[in-house]
Image (cartoon, rainbow, N blue to C red; front, side, top):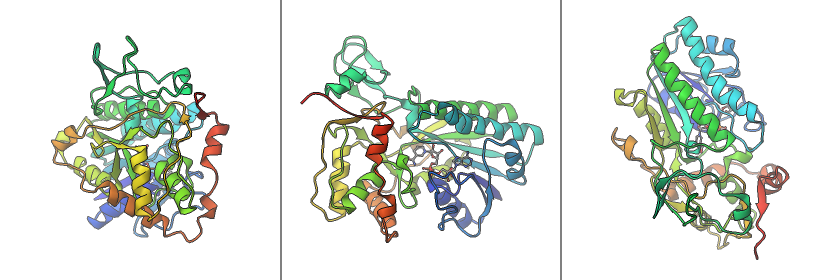
Length: 371
Ligand SMILES: NC(=O)c1ccc[n+]([C@@H]2O[C@H](COP(=O)([O-])OP(=O)(O)OC[C@H]3O[C@@H](n4cnc5c(N)ncnc54)[C@H](O)[C@@H]3O)[C@@H](O)[C@H]2O)c1
């Protein structure tokens, strides 16, 4: 059996490669080695037993070659960043996925199962309950609201504060360029898979963490930024009031979800959340990370906010639970494994570029006005 893992030189894809190799599969990796993720080229952690093709998913001829003799496709390659290059999100995440099916339609290949990585970003600002108007999918909080440090989400109809609910698969509502492209990717995959007659499943990962997250990539988020600050004995900066709610999932649990849905007929044609189902605030995350590092450094909360950030995002894992999946690893284990990965680098200075300043230059990160 042979699997093609696109983005297999990346964080999640490389763990998938290890899993399939350990199950006795032949593994082929297709990865462009995107420079912002891999400025030093092919990562050392990529298993030597995996066949490696350097190529771009936006090139049909690359797909034609990469799909030869493949039984299962795990499509993990994606463009994720904060830059306003909207066309590039669509090109890589949507066109790149359409070409997978175009290649299958033209060449028939041997593919009999496809799993596509989607994201919690398909939920945009999230799902909320208004006491008066019931369940709503609000738009992004307006800039003037955030500038005046009014962080919670209000009902767009009566302005009452709303209560977040666990994100349910039935109500995607993407708002960011990345989220829009991931939802379009998902629909492209599930619909075109039906058209070409190859069973397909989409997995909407929550924030995934563990060893091998690129420490170079600004998009790789909270673990990288907070850990590098704490390593330098500086306080991590929590955005808004630090009360943003998120859920974190261990990469090994994400791998287990991929393995499960690729072999379960009940998963065909469906999209599933893969998360922890448990709310963690950013302040709690910062404190638990500091505790793991043995540092008594409190996060700073200066009133900065990121334009387009969702206030609360925690996925329901009820649907994938019906297939028998549940997360096995705690947040503390996630943090410990991430820190062990950071510790494999003796010189962290090359990662010390100021993510905050870069986001401010892009006008993504802003300071609120109220004192
Ligand atoms: N890590 C998370 O928290 C998270 C959360 C939700 C969804 N996801 C999704 O999971 C998947 C894997 O993410 P990751 O965290 O491992 O990211 P990653 O950046 O570590 O890996 C992605 C890989 O894709 C490759 N790639 C990028 N553009 C490509 C292209 N045009 N052609 C071929 N290869 C290309 C990169 O070089 C990289 O190796 C992505 O689809 C992402 O959208 C990740």
